[in-house]
Length: 527
Image 1: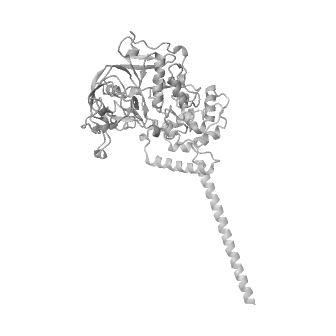
Image 2: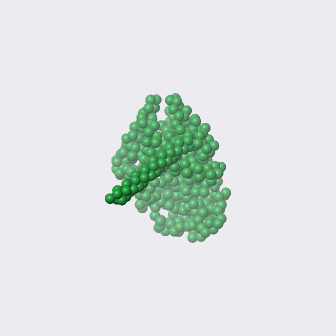
Image 3: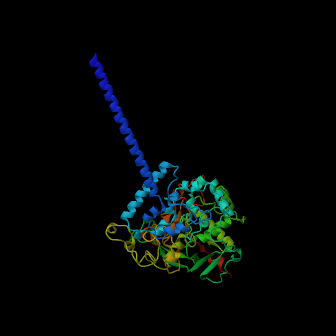
């Protein structure tokens, strides 16, 4: 009996010691865990200071531009730190700390392994880059009131439109306020909104608006004045002539739809020196924009009625049309073929001349500028293209082609201003590269084979898609050949458009398409 009692006491004591050890280990582990969490938090706080951010972020102007921005230099006396903008709010704990960990590791790795002298700082200042590192919920947390004291009437209009159409627009605050965190004296966010009632670009004194279009007395270059605006269009006189349209089987990278070669005669015409610019397109938009969503059938009916004076222009863009690349003389992009045609209709109405899109034959004739080679400048597509086996060993030549075209090897993946390239023999810029250009023709891959061997002023009117010519900023040199043909992919280019029915004005999934205008001499030259 005594032995059993001793055995029970022994086992009971052993259990108590076991539980004491487990409790001790638990508390030690708890204390260590708390210590680790606190240490990690304190470390996180330490490395979230502006000074710590500046250690890795060696952009030569980042600190100065931040100090000049409205997030630091403002009337309220509130300073917004780096983490306030570049991380999700702390109340979103998981998102905040996982984002901090990812960015922290990325920054440290980049600081240790990369040379800041190799960075493309201009690209990193663009909207495409900024939206990746500015969580919209951080902006909303600080700016809970979209209509603060002192906001302008244009700002109220823009914010009301944003508030009512936030999901459809799919915009972030940074999309229209790119300069608030890092000051940029050349940035004007009002240019970029694309919202009714908001001024595009610098306000112009109405007394500077043109009252009459340009009078043309001879077939020579002229600068069109668009009445009611301060905008002009430089037009080049393109003499009529006969040329060989298409490419032979010997031309490198030639495709079947480029032949057979035909002898084509085109009548004289005027053609815009550059692709239709944002300055020109916004002038059209400002005078014709449709307030809200108008059924496409109503727009078509209005614009096809010759008795209607007012043209129905584009509805507000559902995105960011210029992609943050800039406006001015950069080519207007993302508009549909119908929008380009409507621009021509508006320009014709404003000037009393006949403006339209070029036919495919006119476009190729003008692009060649009297030459008969793959490009209007010397060189073989094989030398300039990135395609082919040898390009795995040797780089393509760029020195001879880059002065004339904006393409994949020099564009930095966006459009450029026309001033950076040289003109072709007819004085036209960017006929190849920068953006693809709409033509008046429907696309038919066998169009040339249906023509006679000699043809005058041909125009293809049957087909599902429209011809686009010239390649764009993302094109390989092989696609910039003067004879190269392409066409619209309407449904694909509208795939992510949230509207039903889809927009007739703006494409949601193509950046590198635009247009330039031609003018018929008979309508322009005064007798």
